[in-house]
Length: 166
Image (cartoon, rainbow, N blue to C red; front, side, top):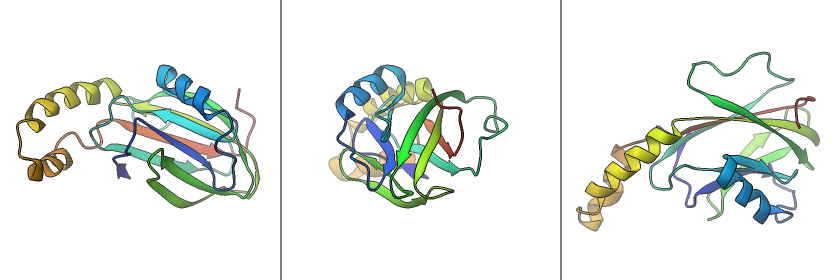
């Protein structure tokens, strides 16, 4: 899905997780390292916060045997995620969210691999778009953003029941 989170970070967590536990430190770490986890929530930091990003969450029955298709992915960054209900939510700090993501085996401990691509290109495009954006009348700005730089910055989060987590 293409998405413009309202903030520079977004997260994947169980809907019943205590999302406040350790989040500030995890966000600081994600900003410096792309992604981090509290154990209850995986945080991902965007390279820019203006253009739409592409985010895909894949649910696997077991540990994937190979990396994602295409040669331009970085990662994985690998984390543990405790899931109390087995129902996940992808959200930002402004309460924009996608629900209805189910774990493959219900409640339990899972591994999340975070892959990313296009961060530098998106940051460059954001600077170019900003120059034009600022010269447009306010009523044209959002349309311009929707037409430029969509999905350059991409994230793939793979969730599975397995032992790859650090």
